[in-house]
Image (tube, rainbow, N blue to C red; front, side, top):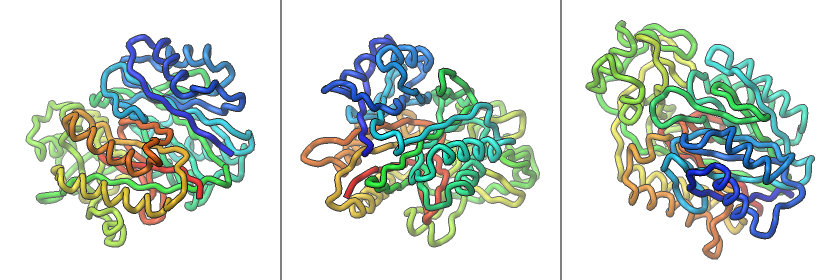
Length: 398
């Protein structure tokens, strides 16, 4: 049976931060059967330096890390440049597997994700849910999910998301196998038959105006909107000059794709959102496969809708869990939902609402979250990539 342990701390010194996390996560000592340590960190910490510190404290434990704009844990949200969060997994070897790949980009997203998924399944054919972490820039997440569905089937839940920087859209980091990369991915599979899972994502933005129509595309690249250079047309819709950067547009530039009616009813919104994290001249790098004729709308946030849909999402998840006990919660947020979108009071209120929903007798379950460039959660019974959302996965036992 798998067990989970978490902690999050703020410290400028990486070695001290790692030590505090281990002390908090393992108050009764480190179990002998720890299979992996997942860690998220804001950009003031170098992932390789954190890994070196963890390796001293937890020798021979495989490490998997990601950069983000903020982290969350049982202790709340950390948005400084020096916050880290961890989730350790212990238990039988036959209930766990992990794998990683390097150099994954938009042009090879399917092939690299297929390699990752096949290696994971080769290790353990009984995996029933997978934590997936990919690079947040220049990747086709639709093809990534297709590769995993082709290997595991759509019934196996994919959760997690993509790494990020501090809103600039310049780089993001992943750590795995004693290396740190900018275009890598890793997957951690759970095969504990006693664990059930439930996922949900929600955003709370509203589309408006006339759509932008993609008139020239190439895979996950959009070259033209409405017959004009994609970037200039996109920036113009946001009342930004064409020399703007992704860092200028990410906080206000959520693009909306229309959902089928049945998915919209489940989602609580008529649209699913997309973020632009990279541009080259007039070319926009879209986070999923684009196509000629695709329509996307600009959006505005609706604070009341954000809260009401988060509440509805939690009601759905807690109803599914019932009287079961939550073993762990994984939270993935878009970085634009952090300090760039909400003030501290509102974020604390949202996170408190989430953590209260999954607590038992006042005890918050092990919790790990990251503010990245994108989120994986199920929608309409299939694994789906989201942006500008809060995506939650709860692992629980009946």
